[in-house]
Amino acid sequence: MIPANYFLILSVVLFVLGAIAFFIKRDLITMFMSVEIMLNAANLAFITFARSASSPDGQIIVFFIITVAAAEAAVGLAIILLIFRQKKTIKSEDMKLMKG
Amino acid sequence: MTETLYETLIIFIKIVCALVWLLACTLYLTWLERKESALIQDRVGANRASIFGIRIIGLFQPFADAIKMIFKEDFVPSFSRKFLHTMAPFISFFFVAITITAIPFGDTLRIGNRTIHLQILDFNVGLLFILAMLSLGIYGIIISGWASNNKYALIGGMRGAAQVISYEVALGLSLIGLIMVYPSLRLSSIVLYQGELLFGFLPKWGIFLQPLGFVVFLLAALAETKRAPFDLPEGESEIIGFFTEYSGLKWGLFMMVDFMEVIIVSTLLTTLFFGGWQVPWLASDGFHFPWGGELLLSHVVVVLLQVAAFNIKVFFFCWLQILIRWTYPRFRYDQLMDFGWKLLVPLSLVNIIGTGIIMTL
Amino acid sequence: MGYFLFFLLAVMTVGAVLGMIISKNQAYNAIFLILAFACMGGLFALLEAPFIAVVQIIIYAGAIMVLFIFVVMMINVHSGISAEKKKWIIYLSPVLAVILIIELILSIKGAFSLPVSTEIIKAGPTDLGRLLFTKYLYHFEITSILIIAALVGAIVLVKKKEKK
Image 1 (tube, rainbow over the protein chains, first blue to last red):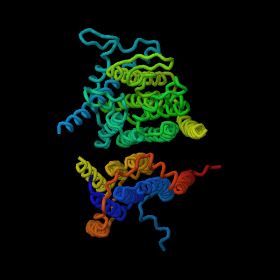
Image 2 (cartoon, rainbow over the protein chains, first blue to last red):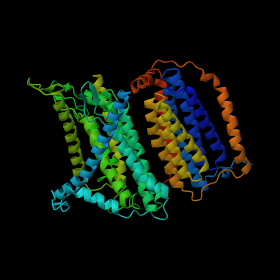
Image 3 (spheres, rainbow over the protein chains, first blue to last red):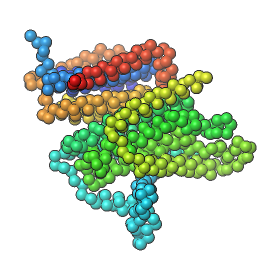
Image 4 (tube, one colour):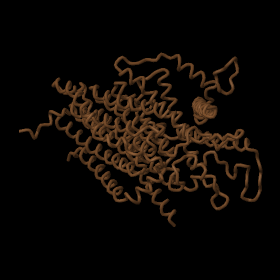
């Protein structure tokens, strides 16, 4: 059995990579993808802890996270599509309506 | 040590056998398709390919086709995205071929004191595994359409992906009733449950317990294979499809994937709705007829009968799918979407509710 | 064997995410991400969660990423959008990443020495299904309402207004 800390370290690395991608990238779709990576890193940690505690509850939470992520992706992509229709761009810097 | 060696060897042999079976079936399905379409259109069909002058009703035709395809020029358009353009057919091929790992070909085979499951891997989520791999298969379509860098191919790819992903919903929902009846996702135990008898004489096959589920699954699976009447993604003759920029062996791979999907769908229909390798009234020691007769058979004969039954059922469904393909005209795109979302999905929901009501009674 | 699979999948996942960070093309980004999610499915299977592994592949790699690819192809920005213009941010980010990784690892260090129970975890599809319909019934129902709301919301948002 592979020790839990291997998976935890992998999860940390993935989370940080997702965060970095979120800050570096400038188009909305890729930024959204980075959020998904961070969610997945959290899922990995949840399942690792579920195995350590030998209880299926962690897996149930991951199940809910995945379903919520699906809902989130549908709405988020719809919003991005709307932004593109109105502004003809998906660069994050161009979204500055609220900037005084 | 020798034990693990034997285990590895057995798994290796099983993988080779299953792949050879799949590829040989694919090869001869092309022959069957040619002959059956010829029969329907009152022609003779391909019968000229010969080896040393022997041409047994065109049985060597698939080899001639394969050789022709291998030696054709493999033309990659200069404007395409080369790497993905090359990868796409292999992605399609891989995700279809890997589903064969979860299909049970027969019950256990005993050699000496070793029992061998005639199934490569017995997942406890085997059914979902197959659905997952089929759903990953659509990346072959999308990527080939996108990497061709051609507007028609891109639109064809998106059309194909939209079709496959819509019908996947109906496909998945139609199986829920079945999972309620046979409480397992493990394909081998689903087949074992179907060995029992209903009212003492009728085998407990999925078709008798889930007729509506069977119809919805068959129609959705036909759409998943992307052949007529659902062949809008490809539309060889009229609309330009996603593999229009492919030639030679890569085009051949896409064609092979189509035929392999037909076989996989047939194996699924057999396993889920027609008892898999079960022969009616055949137990592990021979036939026990409901009217009292008995016919005892040796173990090897029983296993051979089961594998033969599986193959016959699979070939029947392959034949049926080719028959449907050459009988019905193509849907219009809006009809296709209406059919999927407004007929099949509600029908499968009705099936779930009906199954639930009957099971609580 | 298990270790070999773990390292293979881990390297592929991290490599795919790094590829996504480096690549400028959105379609390639999406394809890298599909690879990453599929490998994550493999990791879940290694963690004795076969059901979640399959769900991950069906929903994440098979459905969510198809949505992403559809949107990428519909929008089809020809010239890739390059990463941050300010160079110093790009050079600083690996440093900050390493610091953050070390910090996070130090913070969860306590979990490394958790006693690993040896009893076999009961998380087959049957057990998870039973839990979903008993202990987590309300959560399950609320999630279903959420999904319906998201479905309707996405359609309403994207649908073009009919011209009279």
